[in-house]
Length: 132
Image 1 (cartoon, rainbow, N blue to C red):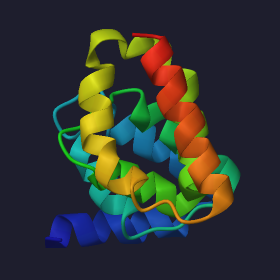
Image 2: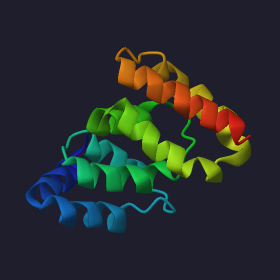
Image 3: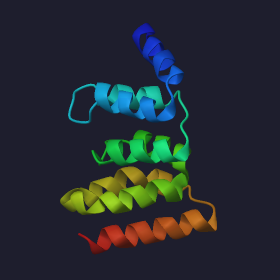
Image 4: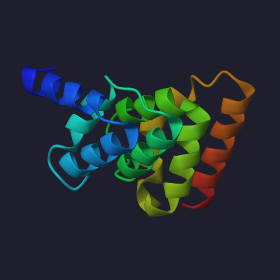
């Protein structure tokens, strides 16, 4: 992380979680060219589940991503099942890109070890395949 990102990270950490969510979305909208900076900042932050879910819903709506980096980030915040629940709610918008989404999610999905995560993976994949 360069100095500019370190400064923004420090600013982000000084904010209350709801304010930090608004700040990230305002400064790094998914429609903009610099939304990836939000992911970098989030990798060095922590949020309560409510705010993490808000951020996941916002930034995962841009999926599919070209790697599993963003998915791993939100799985770290919310657990795999929590992240898949959000992706499941967003799945109607993925349409033809569902296969690409699964391709990039697959390394993370294969790491599911708990029964809860395995059930969430099965349900998510079945739902995604049914919507194609």
